[in-house]
Image (tube, rainbow, N blue to C red):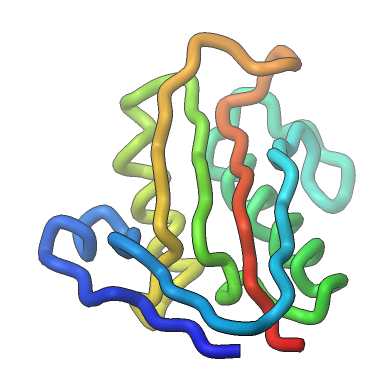
Length: 131
């Protein structure tokens, strides 16, 4: 599988996303929207943006691992938040999950409500893993 991240400018680096990711070969993994109201130990995460985002990244990584890849294989993500004030915080959290600077392409969208009370963020995406 070949994956190329188009060069990023300062704007993309500052927001932790790539303008485009080009892939050739590999298995495409379509990731359903993921939310998190509890952590791995069952602790309630309602209203805790950072903890929900971190848990979602863990869950997405685990799903991609079941398909033979890692979180680094994500090529695009759509992120839904219900408070635009959390946008910069999300960018910082995502930046830590892709420390090599090879970010997925991304959209960050503000919504008014989620399917369940207490949710503050949902992430869906696509990964391409080596065959």
